[in-house]
Length: 423
Image (tube, rainbow, N blue to C red; front, side, top):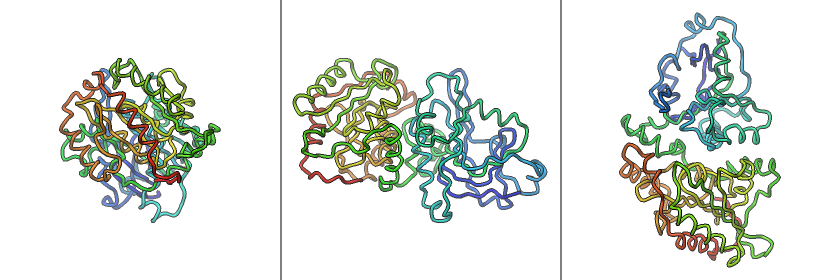
């Protein structure tokens, strides 16, 4: 029986080889238990009760380490082999979003994996969401659409497909496994010291905060692949004086709706001011209601966008498809009593500058060092957000439409040359 090997690991992001599975339990086989990280940093136990999602540390029914002798007794000598690479997102619907593919691909770029194992385990052969039913409404469209566009030959499976594996009653060997679990990340000692802090980070933080930022070029190839699949020019406006090329400003929203939305009057004023830029500055402006546009059209516009505006949530996350340059900017509009790092780290990992905006001004300048922003975001998030965070996002967000549009214009008109520089 082959031993399980750890290729790379950070809390919530783990690359393994030779992982066994029987009756839904992941078995890591080795005679050296100390060769694995603490299992609570790999996987979590999720449960939904009356529409609420609860999370705990994993039990032996979810994942455990066994020695070779025990493995032979449990597994026998015959098993079905899942060749290639399997991506397993262990998050439930409440914590799953369209940044999944970016997170999974970022896992492949861990330095430990690249330096110790000079082999490619991309593209994934299959992508599994064992906690998410494909029969439930509200599943982010990109969970299945993005992988299928980036990796056309990969299969995508949900909770029902995972149960099919369980019902086999026969051991399975997963040749390569990339396991992602947001709650496992929030347990990291770098992020939290107790269960309450971990839950707080799960609500307002991003799993990607455990990674170091690396040059944007790592994601550019995947973004360009998406652009090619959709037949879109992968480069956006970079300050050229040609009248045939214009900056693209996009405001994406879900209004009215539950979740983070602008005050109705501010929302209308923002739309008026943005549309005025078409005549006053010659910009291309898109006003996108996320409920009324197809997934493909939304990504097509994002690929060409220079400046994107939106409230906290999945809308502003579309900035990951923007072309990273000195003028690319995502502006996330926050209410007075809420701050989250979720999109800051997602968008930053894709190489796009992120600006947190509140009321009539930015919270941080785009030149503020990453370490200072990270600490400030987390400190404010922990201080500002008591239990019941979601209630704050049900209150209308006020924004000074004139100030934020003027800021976007000054950003695009800045006199810093026209050279296209990747971050």
